[in-house]
Image (tube, rainbow, N blue to C red; front, side, top):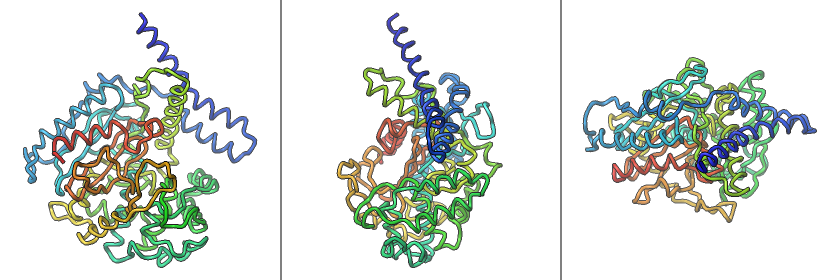
Length: 485
């Protein structure tokens, strides 16, 4: 009886907290005196409100009955050329996926693994709603596209790598050599490497740029893009570039995007299509925003998990209630943003990547294997990848002295901070980037391993305070145990 009473109380609190973010945003919209902020609050309310009206995901047992974790590997060979048992590895992945779906923290996932440039595992499980499918749930497949937030920073970094590989620019040269307008505000000496390694001192984003992007459905994505580039050109660094590091959440979009566009004489979105997706034979599976309409029926919506991780913890104090509220707020707002028409029709190389797990793992599979896949497909020359890896040994301190991230590497667009939770036992370098919500892609040159984990269940970053969320870490560790990597 006491248990039922506690469960009822928890469910009641859950419903109240789940509705509060939308009510707070609506109140701010009505009460705020400045019209600009009214528009911002109203937009966030619109993004968060659908959660109130949409039906919840199916029960975990229903999901496992109709869409259990399934092998999606194209090869029928029992073992890979590297001697890995596909069945054994995929069974280990399936076991973890089934456990996560059963406990209600995940809804639909896709996991792909490469080793020494060869696909060794591909597992899909669970269900998703698509951008064009309304309330209809269907199984996740190998062709399912996921909106993966900052996972696309790694894809953008690879686009820059192709420019370096073709001699169109060098990591060590000044940005102004190819983009003269960038030199305004005392940025004349900033190198390309420092600019894309989160050392440029340009972490902010102007309200005017935000408003231009919100107006993109009317004015067009190109105008929003040019506004972002102009904002970066005028930016006065917050510290001496190259001396310190701090994460450039969104401004990274126009920093790396402007550099690639000037170097390649081609928009970064098109560089990804022609130099990465086409070369790897994953056309229709990799997009830096600007998602084609005909791909929306394959693209999973971000979802609020049926039994969020924080609901399984008792609300023992006011602090717990606040953390719960913040987690719900983040999940509702960022799931809503990721599902919106505006978001998928912008190009933000920092944030709005749409990929299949197979395409991300294949890209990292080449990078982890000196630039080429086992079938001879070459993404970049081995010398270029070696240069990328060598640069990562250059480190600098973080802006915040309280940062627990450790020194920042000169990562040339990949994540500059090492994450011990997903690192291998040999302390090998990871070319990696995770995204808000729990998606992840990485390649490990020292072992030849690459992994991509994409999913539709949004895990709160603010609640965990970790760039890679617990369920994602659990999958990576299971893969490493099986491969002993």
